[in-house]
Image (cartoon, rainbow, N blue to C red; front, side, top):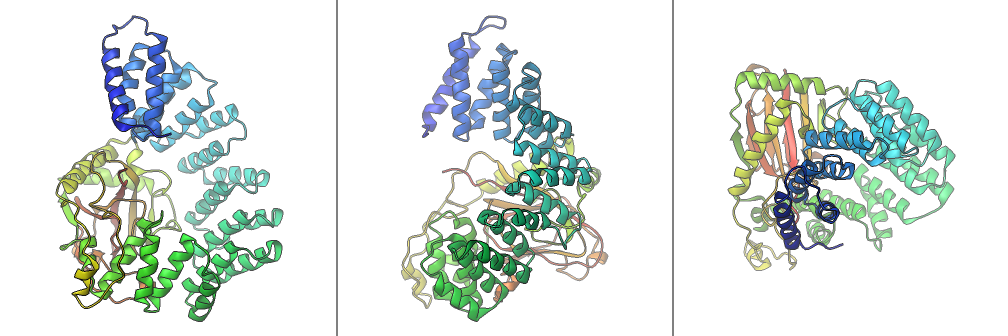
Length: 542
């Protein structure tokens, strides 16, 4: 459903004016209640919880016994990522209507997100909606968050025996085992499920993906071979074989499989082709693939590769994309030593994993739960970080230059080459509207001696970050630039030689902001602890 944003704002203003005219204790017309509820639902559908919250807040003040209004207010607060307030609203809805499964689930999920004990709440939500696998997953996550990893595993294992095709359950269980240090058989639930459902293609591909993330190419290949015996040839297996050949470095095999899959349109395959072309020095072909992929949903993943290609080719569009100087800024968040120490204690309590998450860039350290945002938690220290970070983000955005068109192919050719003529989408940093600040992710990373981040980008973000909470003293870090953050260096497995675009020395209380499309890495250091808060600002909707 398309909702006109201007009309939505006008409805919001009108309903607020109407509600202000109703004295406390007077009955609110049923038609007005329905109109406010309709606005709340429409605002949520449009991603505008900011419009729904003030109107629904006024409504529950006038009709405090309406469970539906409290529940919708909870969802609106959740949309705005205000989890402590969402807990309050869902809790009230659950008290008023204890048999409402939506209110019960909302209460449980918002409590988990806010950092409160939530296992019992999920158990209750599941009792109201038996068979709700989302509630099972939340219950397992809540148990793990409360330190009951064994109980979480048992719950997931039992559910997967009854629902072997439950992909989210497999992913949650595999992540739980991996981060607990069980690296050898962390994905064994997939194997057991494929024994029961050998022709389930989605299940087999999810198993393949889990092992491919560990770069266990031989085990991943066997999954595909076994799948072909049970299911036969299919495009998904051909794509997987092409991906395997490209990422494992088998150049001849990769060329063969990319030729055999030439007619298949698929973003995963396109990315594999693109990376293969970069490894083998086929820059013109890589650029053509990237420009084509830029038209689809994978564009946030493609911009960083275009930066590499254009820099290697001496193309002026690299400076248009990354900035000249690069769009990187450091901010002092004015933390006192005492405040940093208090924040440090809170963050250390959250680092319960024994190994970093599979899909992340951390090497030699741990990361807080990637499925629940750090900034959603209710601890005052976390909320203070969020407030200071938001102020810095607003300053960063206010200081960004206005969008400008990319250099034309003619301008680039003046530098000695003639790129393919292609119109580019709006700039991935500057070309988006600048308004509300929401987060697509927020977490903490604790690096140990020799720990580092491999070069990576953040395709789910618009603006990314590093806020330094604890940094080893110079004597422990090692010779500069040990422990520094460095920008613009290509991933090592691509084998490209490009200089860094910049680097920053970490300083406690300092925040570094940069485009999410920019390659960045953290260099290893000798000794001590490097504790960081990081986040991705959500790409605004245009």
